[in-house]
Length: 90
Image 1 (spheres, one colour):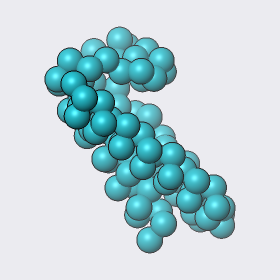
Image 2 (cartoon, rainbow, N blue to C red):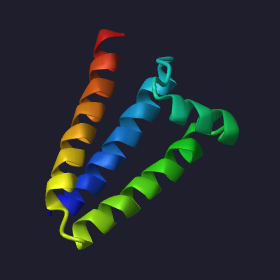
Image 3 (cartoon, rainbow, N blue to C red):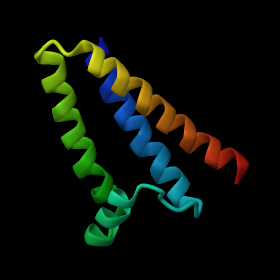
Image 4 (tube, helix red, strand yellow):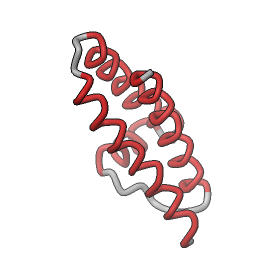
């Protein structure tokens, strides 16, 4: 269940990022901005790091690092919440 939550939060973060990009709010993460300039399409730029994050989350889950995965879930819940807040104040 913890890993599934991690995957859902990755998808939520990606979707909320695409939503605020669509509404003209700029990306704050310099690595994602670099990926966006390299890929051109924000969906592709977000897919690569999200797939990598999911692979790392799977590794953490399989290797018993549940505490790390829980901390990452909290971090990405904050990221998705931040994205929604950015849209609310826009």
